[in-house]
Image (cartoon, rainbow, N blue to C red; front, side, top):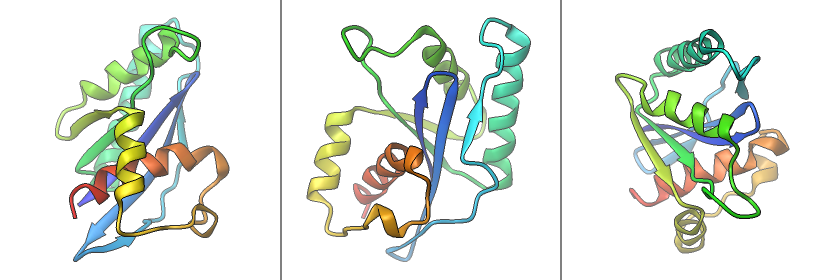
Length: 142
């Protein structure tokens, strides 16, 4: 199972790939750490973002995209651009897209039988939430 964890932050989709094969975790090399939307107001740019992410899915044979859910309202609510990015990802063909609430992520990480120290993954700091999202989803399927 190959999963792409996604955290939407501003105009960026921070990504982290995680693979589970025979109960072994692996972090496949990936050419990109984030996919960005350059000009948020244009339909052309949004389509380009979606096409770029679809190419990432195809190139790395991603089976599931797991997006960290953001609140719809309140102090930490996601912005309009983030919800556009989320919709663009949800409409991708040929890949399962799941929105995972932060409470489910926290519970899955706490209940996981496996502990992975983030500093040992080789990922950048801004990818931590994306990694935790992917790890939480995969650990639920052990």
